[in-house]
Image: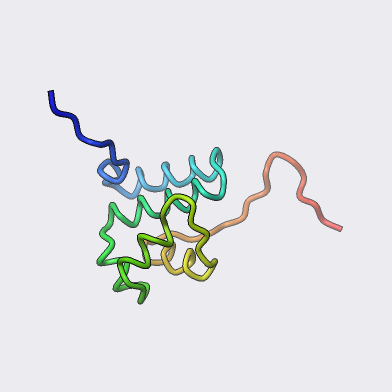
Length: 99
């Protein structure tokens, strides 16, 4: 029996699935998990398309969005915009710290 390596990007085939995936990782993961998740979404959409929209090269994107990388915030924002996402702050169940 032949097996293939699991790739979550193969299952991110709708906006609803992408949103649910990213929100779950944001809620339950750490910063490294979020970067990898954004990379998985970019891969599911197409790295060439994301590269064109961000002005970054495909190799740079793969490197910036791989496990253990620490991309610049500007890079993360470019990729989020290219995948059709945005950041939004909502109060957590705990009170926000306002001085």
